Length: 167
Image (tube, rainbow, N blue to C red):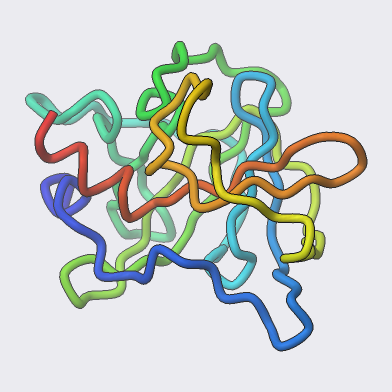
């Protein structure tokens, strides 16, 4: 299962904005930055669970958890973005998402520092990541959305997961 995460996602890298140019998302924090995932992907938000390390796996998806009797990979996208792994706090959570991997719907846990809210973002306030001046790979970001004076990062999970197989 971990190996499948290190292969290309079958999911479209573009977000599914509605006809009004809005996208419902779940926002969360990683290392002081605010990220968002399409709410439709989210299956559940969990307190931290015991993890089992998988020998030889990439650090990015280096462990698994038991989710409702199923073993699922636990990814830490902080590592994909070159951030330091964070220490667990009282606010740390796991977001369980469903994504398509090689044509198969798969559950994956994403470790976060804090889950914030479900909210709606406006496409009119979005822009592509700048090609220079970014501390992260621009292809790891679908877009940035300005909201209340800050940027919310919509990660490109397809690029993140597919690149990890080569690392």
